[in-house]
Length: 372
Image (tube, rainbow, N blue to C red; front, side, top):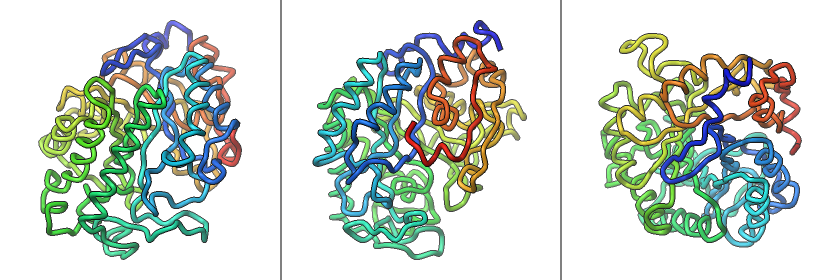
């Protein structure tokens, strides 16, 4: 692929007031390398390398709010307390390399940590004490728990702006806390935080957004990551029609989300093929069409295998970008997030920009165990 063939990826773009040198985003990827939850020099260098190699916007791995069980692995970075001093060198390094960055703000909810007997300081918590439909896990959050959690999200937003980050992303996807409120399978509440409709179950997310918006004021770009699929059920769908999707997403945009980061496993798969065919709009495309908000797409960019296989030790070979370029040339979505390709090859964006497809590295699952 020639340099000119990928021009659509490298156009400067201002999105929700966020001026970016190109349309490539480093996707959030949990690394679990922060000693005591505090980012160190190795983490700062990890992000700096990508910023220096033509990544327009970096979204950090999930960083947790000040709740006793907001994380489920010991070395996930925090975004509160002593960890904030660790984040200052990270954003300074990214800015010095010419990049932009936002932390992903996260609460894992009622999701056990994979492959570990480590336990957080408090009991896991979720909307209904369910880790998956019909599977009890953790505590049901009280009104006080919910209020404290909303406050903790808002405090993280204020800290992100104070430290000089350019944006932040709220993790509302993949079966974690906010997504557990969205999903009828894990939200069986009958109070104001539950309900029969997706709109009703979105109240918690909307209140989080309103509190975070109030904490940073107008004009500071807020990204919200969403997904149909859950780690508990890869085939789950919150919205099965465009009308349902609009009823879900528009109130979240109204509550303060400027950019919707629409997670799917393969970016080229249409969201509603029964309406617009096998080459129809993907999740991010429909979200942009329905709400008018800016969107980020993601899903197996530059690789021939999707990411779930990496958890069983499988790698992936490089793949062409023609399908991606075609969608970006028609502005189906505004930005594209790249995950594993950037994890295993910090120079991925620079190589694509130069048209050096042959120099791109395949993804090896061993990259998950290092912080290169």
